[in-house]
Image 1 (tube, rainbow, N blue to C red):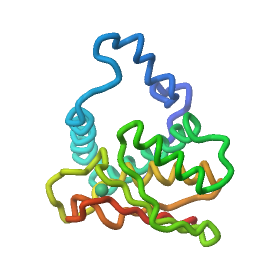
Image 2 (cartoon, rainbow, N blue to C red):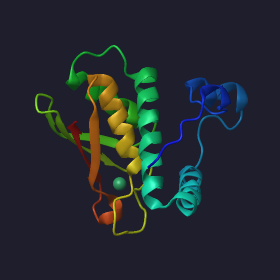
Image 3 (cartoon, protein in one colour):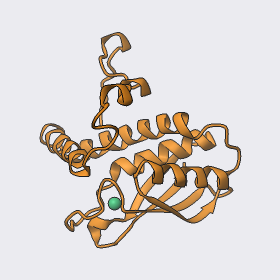
Image 4 (cartoon, helix red, strand yellow):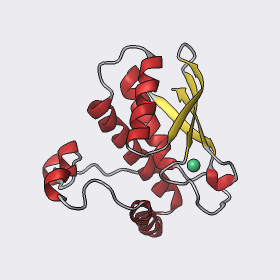
Length: 178
Ligand SMILES: [Zn+2]
C-alpha cells in the first residue's frame, strides 16, 4: 500500500492511551462494560467502508498496522519491566483474560529461532462468526506482532493459520522474527 505520511501538526487522531478517557468519571452508571456486538459492529462497518474505498488488501494492511499500534500501546500500558519470555507470556495471558480479549494458549516458543505458535480461543474479533473462506483476524495478527516486537526489540511477522471463520474452533497464529 502506498502510504501518504501526514505531517504530525496536521493530525487530529495520533494515538495516545489518554484518548481512551477516564471511563470511571465518564460512565458512573454504565461503567466499563459494553456488548460485544457493539465492538464488532464498529469493526465490521469500518472494514466495509475502508474496503469500498481502498480494496480488501489495503484494508487488511490498515487493520494489521492498527493492531500493531494497539499492541505497542498495550505493551507499554500493561507489560513492561519483564525480562523473560515465560513471564511475559503468562502476564499477557492474564491481561487478555482480564480484558476479555480471549483465552491465550502457547503451543510453541523458540526465541532462538524467533518462532512462536499461539492460539486465542473465544477471540473478541471472530469467535462465533459465520464460516468464510479466509482467516479474518488481521487486527489480532498486528496486535501480536506489536506486543512481540516491543518485548523482544526484534521485528515480527504474525500470520493467522487457523481461524474460527475457516472452521476451527480457535484462532492459531504463527509468529516469526523477520
Ligand atoms: Zn480468527
